[in-house]
Length: 166
Length: 208
Image (cartoon, rainbow over all chains, first blue to last red):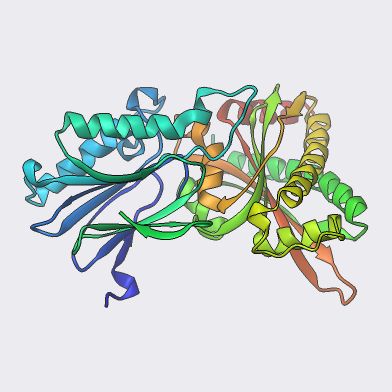
């Protein structure tokens, strides 16, 4: 059994890294995407909570690189390198990217941000040659996710559909 | 801008929240034929993650009505209720259909009643706000959903997130006075103005 205090929480537009037996969790993903990159041999895993697809959208300087898919994933990978993880042993699992509301009129691009986030995350993972093992994306519901680096399982909890593992 | 100016600005926003909420509370009182009050709202500049904590944790399940302010001001307005309170409110609005908390997520009529309620009180909130600052604000069609509060509210933070990691957060608590004087929370209004609108509000208030 793992105790409660061994769960590392990742907030919105934040990143974290854990080593088994620690777990890593992010809560209330809506249009945001939770990206887990892990290594099964060292049992080290990192997670980043992506809010927006592309850092070229930013009007901030300096900006929080963990907020965007392109810079956030790169930042996570760089930090995993520092832990000694080799790029060829990295694997990824992702969840989130829902469309929480459907606005028919005055629908700005921001309302479609969930699918765009998922697309941007996949592009970045492909560009870095990190295989995407499984995903639970889209739909119109929120998700809380928790990754266990011990067995490589990603738990997904929703309000109406209960718990599942990918 | 020094800290004192910042505090004064937040006081102005708090006052604005008071006016809007006062109107919304009156509308809700009339609808439910009960005495509904609002307490002094909180106006604060908070980080996104602090905001989630203020709402009781980002994975807390809630019923929320969301609409956007359009016109001379833009921003997001959320009316958020616990699932228990949402169920109670719906049962007061349509007493002939007794619904349970478990039925709530799939109860179309109930959710539609909640959406209409959100629509009415949000319109009152925005009308008061619009009159007070002399800028035209119209509400979008409201959407209702039951889900984790963080997943819902992030929708209102997307515009701001491109320019900042912080947002202005104007919280208003609605409470109900019962016979034995115990006040029970009925819900929260969260107003999240977009960055350029914040400046417009302050300019409009400054001219008064």
